[in-house]
Image 1: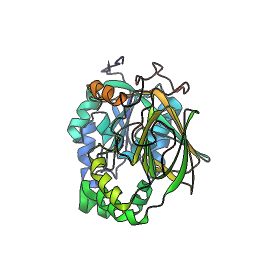
Image 2: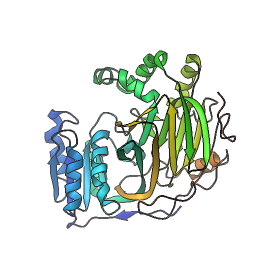
Image 3: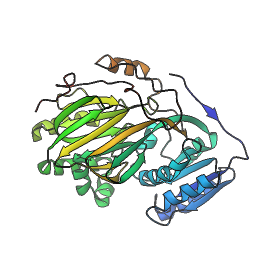
Length: 358
């Protein structure tokens, strides 16, 4: 895979920071602004409510800003990305993680600490990464991390801010255990790149560009941000005891070869189901099935540390031997989608047949 690393330190570079003042707590706002002062010439704009981050990002693109920094949680980042979509691939994105989950930055090597994250932005190392696009009904939304449907939405109903505050990183596990008795299986049809078709009774499906969810759980442990493909992880219907046994493996990112999981990789994924599956993209609701997801190969230049998969080529080669092909993404840097899947790999029963056992 050809690496692209660019160092940009021009004093003339125009930087606009889109800051969610509610992220990180009001008492930290002065400290955040002081840290941002170490970015030469950065202009700081605060969001005023839902949707305002996207509006500010659109304005920044129209104003010809060179670098847009999303300062907030995963929700702020997703708003900024969708506002920037009109300018892809011409505007660079930086991230200052101030939320509680901050799952995406785990994949791009941006530390959670304020000073350390600002240092990454100041250094200016960039890479081109893929962007994903989701469509459901009349809604189209771009995302960087992952889209999830089924079980994750039922967990979110139990997972409120008080649970997050009291349980910290274990909050998702606690809420998942509470949601197990309420699980609903969906009979789903999944089409990959207009060819391979899967049918499965499932509890959850993840369509991932990056790896982590729920404050660091590696839901898609093989996902890479620059391979030109989406990782599709399907959690099949199982008994409560089987699910309870799967959860510890998922926490460690060792679930892809479980008999209760189907794993594939594709550039375009279409999902339909009965009953309909509600989906979110980076935590933002997008609607119910039928839904479609596609990858925009290397459509975004992002300021980053070390991507989580750098140095893992040996691990990826081992994974490919389980049933996939070439995993290098397309060389194109623009938001064009087409062609066969970069790779397909399967695990678990039914991985090669295209039809999962009931």
